[in-house]
Image (cartoon, rainbow, N blue to C red):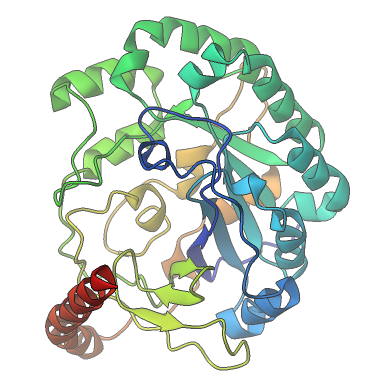
Length: 367
């Protein structure tokens, strides 16, 4: 088996807020956006494939697609996924695991060889599934994926209301998945410091949710709340793409560059250098994939895989080898002077960009 090299990682926003669940910890629920109509993309799927060509992106990339609502409710997601798999990329889809029709389409309309490069990151909204009687459907869909060679990973966003059900959650996972689900960390995006969304103390939170022995949870808690001072290659070795605006950002809330309007033009990749966010709350992907080379971290594969009691992996062999790589293995690092110059420019760019955003927001509020 030839080892495909991971060149870049992109977190890609799908413009869909529609959702078939109403979790009490979700901002889509809070803002009453879950019933909004799914709008078509402004760009055709062949246009997007051309914009995401290996030649333009520099090689095979890891593409993570996530909607603000349920990603698989976007009617174009299956043909878009197939096109990008055919282009040679590896694709991740974030989902709540319930759209059975779309999951069947993924297993039936994408050839088996391409399915080896697809993984579904399946959120486990236990309370909603239990209250709506959807647990059987949820696990049936996961088994359908597994039978058809699609990698998957299951993670639960912990809420204080689920604490009394922890033993039941464990039992259900072991019975249906052969292993415990991973645990992520719920965060409060309404506050600038982006704290953990819980009434528990940090130590209590770790004690309660650490019993799932999830490397994802362990690493997120290790870095949660720690500002990153090191030089970050996000923006050069990947970035955040918004399919609604057609823009690439060095990271969340960073300056944006339009990259989808002209799919033939070179992309002006540039490292962010300095992080302007309180902490790297999604460092389980950015950092484990190697955006900060000197930072010693587990691999992204460790964040996602589980080995079942009978020895099966949630993640297939070819996907495992891809997710176990670090970006610095396949990219050149910048010399010290180039990094210094990027940091100097960032000291000027950040305040100017922030001022422009505030002015833009104020103008649009008046309309």
